[in-house]
Image (tube, rainbow, N blue to C red; front, side, top):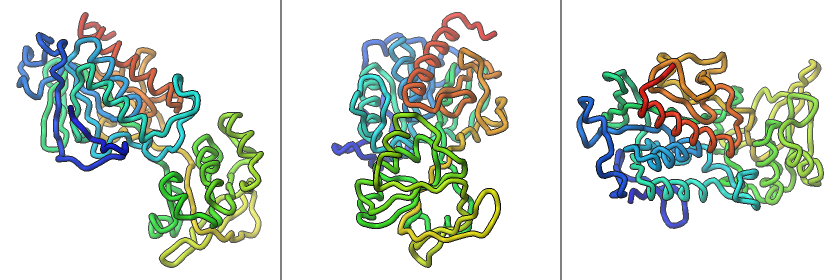
Length: 348
């Protein structure tokens, strides 16, 4: 079994492109891309690019349908999930679950179903007969169907001081850095689910959490809003934007500007946590598919792109819910549609 996680469920570095393919009973006799001119060892029916919830769900179900399946989990399997201390609203986990626990559970389940895993990222794809040629790390693979579930990355503020102080008080991971800021004042920039969720985690460590909101009210789910507004350690400033992160070698505060104009002000803080949305990781396929104005891949209701045999699932696609349960559903649906395409060859 490919093992990308140590016993504490934290990711560990393995030799790049280490590949496992289960000796699952379904693997015998599976129709492979070799029949279409590809080499057997690197030829798959379905390749899934992405090791988050959508990718792992797609890998699980493609394997359950008896398809020779490979999941390109990336160099750090799990992606953004690793920075989430408490995923809520996912069926089957009424008390929530840490992202760094959920990913290895899902990977083991997909492997048990027969999926293979490679610790490499999707770098380039090309058409190959009636399928795809996929370049990842030092390897080249072929697949008759490709599911792009490459997720997203957290959006940066793009203000002075942010890059220079990254890792020196500027963070995107409350679960990682909150213990280092125990008893300190911190700032959270953002007003959505992620910002509220991380503020709640920070409030158990920091002396004070100040949420800075561009708008006039909190967004996101009501369950988070109620808890954030009731937490005495969390304060709110509405109608402001951060124009600079202050500090020389370590964060000392932020400079803010009212959105409606007027004089700026400064706020002391030892940490700045930025949660102002995400940007889709669609760069590798952007020249091949149609994307919306925010860079998300457009699909139809069956998660098919405009390119034959190419699907998109999870937050990388336009119209995705951005929720963990929605990502799982996307992955399952993409695998079902891929299997249907491989069975009947019908695309439109």
